[in-house]
Every structure is written in structure tokens, then in C-alpha cells.
Image (cartoon, rainbow, N blue to C red; front, side, top):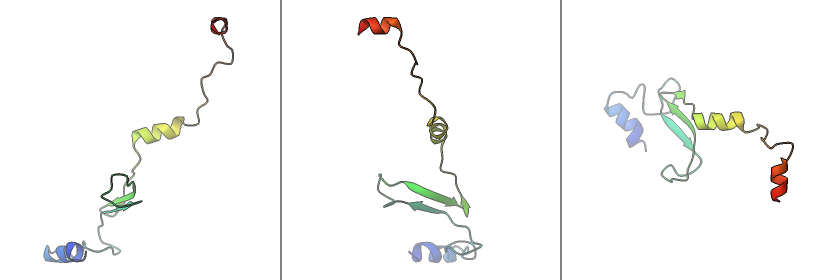
Length: 85
């Protein structure tokens, strides 16, 4: 792992700002709940260039917004519906 991260950054001349997880260095990092190559794994948090990325998308935001919305069930049953029963 060191050869892929710290060693590569040193060879490229960027070892002072890349290659390890130290304060003041830029980091691109993902945190998952399982194997990163497994399709069932979810990304829990992501950091690009040391800044956390918001993983929420429009669909998730809309779901959260309307999740607690009351149902649109009518409070009365029309006579036509009662007659068909």
C-alpha cells in the first residue's frame, strides 16, 4: 500500500502534499460499509482534496421531504363505490 501511495507521491515530487493521511495534506478518501469492489457495498462518506463531499442526491432529498406527508385517503366513501361492493 505504501508503494502505491507514499512512494508514488514521493517519486512524482508531490510527497509534501500527497501520499499519506497527515494534517495539511490533500486526501481523496472513501469510507464504505464493506468491500469497495463489491456491488452491494455503500459509500458512507467521501473526501476529495481534503473536503467532505455531500453524498445526498435529489431523490434522497425529496424522499426525506415527503416521507412524513399524510396519506391522501378520502375521509368519506362515495356512494358509487359503496354500491359496487
